[in-house]
Length: 253
Image (cartoon, rainbow, N blue to C red):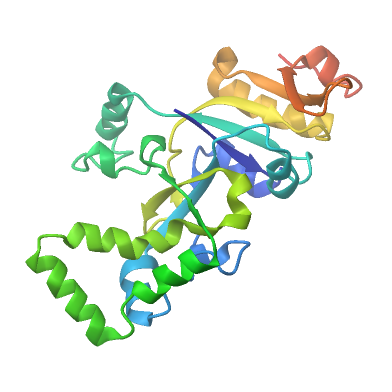
């Protein structure tokens, strides 16, 4: 499985590449103030949601709106992540990068990404109305779930609010990876491709290319986005340092 992260080129995104981590956001920092705020009960938010951090990805690397909204109108770039193999996960566990005692299906990795559910107003209102109105009703629902052996299902239903979005956002074709407590986490997959925006400067492209080249050598391909004049679609070609870094006066080894 491959998923894509659109990024603005800045000090923070560069630091994440250099130091090989990904920043999982607090839902409160999302650009949509409705996102992640469906649960209003304070106890429920503290118990079920506040410890959760979210990494948002798309299933597409050529979405024109995502390039505009999240990659600084093509002045940024897009990272391709590919899921780890089971053998690679075991190696990372042996290095204490992932918890040794955690089952693979609980790790914050690509294969465990959750599809965002896009709903209309009525569907979202129905979900909100199904939530307990107060702590008394919460305790009652929790007890019933325990009696029926459905605690995990109940917790999942509560946490579902972290991957419900209005249908207007459906163009993002989004998946989310949930991590507990930490914002700074190991990448959820191998970096297997870098896609530079159409308007990214030569020096910015070279900066990222140098980082990727030092970490992965030629094993991670890099691409330049462009528009073919004969069609209204985004296409990609291989990075060509002699062409794409021309005029900088800097050698790319």
